[in-house]
Length: 94
Image (tube, rainbow, N blue to C red; front, top):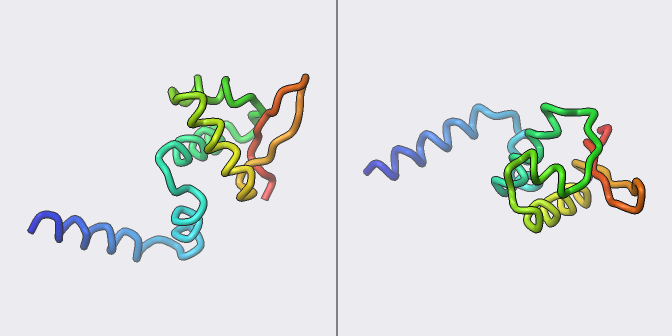
């Protein structure tokens, strides 16, 4: 019975969410690591840094962060560029 109540709560919360935000979360921020990364860049919108440093700030495994940063860049949430021979990531302007 408790599981059903939590499903009702989730459905109500998602029903209150703007459709664009819900779609963004379902399709682009579909893991807890991506959520942490999007929050990091939201809190630090002018940051441009390497995956290694971002992983350290986020308290996450570097290999996992590299994969998720690459996914977010492919989705257009982040942009990537080269700096000193290293890939760096920043929040997309859109």
